Image (cartoon, rainbow over all chains, first blue to last red; front, side):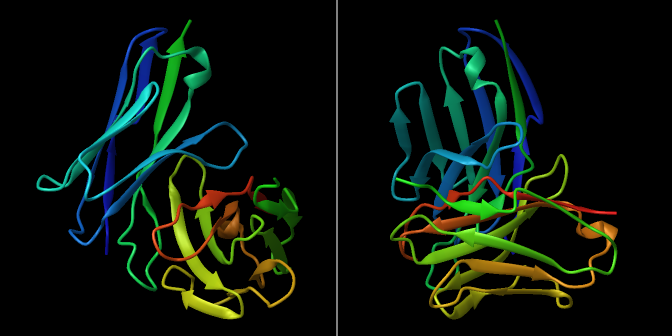
Length: 114
Length: 114
């Protein structure tokens, strides 16, 4: 089955700096890669996703890049703000008929220092 | 526009009792997924359902756990004869359809087994 590795497990940055979180996956059949933000006591919130036919996607201060050959994808947050502090999870899925399960990484706790 | 709803938000059960968790998908969504999150870990897929059908239950423990999504009403995750190791946060997600659609998560049910 799929295995998703996520690094780093914790990340502390100063407000205004950039943050980068990296994930690798093992199943070459995976073709959908979402990122979720989870705040304490809440459910995961989808913040951005990318499909395998695209190499990069950007939404305001958030961008995701995908390298299918190397089987890794990254989340980039620019101009970080204290409200970006949360746990971030990457995930991968094959998106085939009958197979929709997301395999999650272990999470990155991001702390943005004001 | 209500999101995914789960109840109860917190559930305490003694060992040996039954736990019943409910999930109402977003309006118009017909696909439901259940995930389990242990403390300080990522989410683990359990089961994927459509109305009246279980599509993928590859992540469900073989015993004591069952799930349904009836024609009318919410999806139910049932855990019989709970043990302390069942203590976790259980999240439900829904998607509009099965093909290439994002999964949106509810706030979760935190189950504590005493």
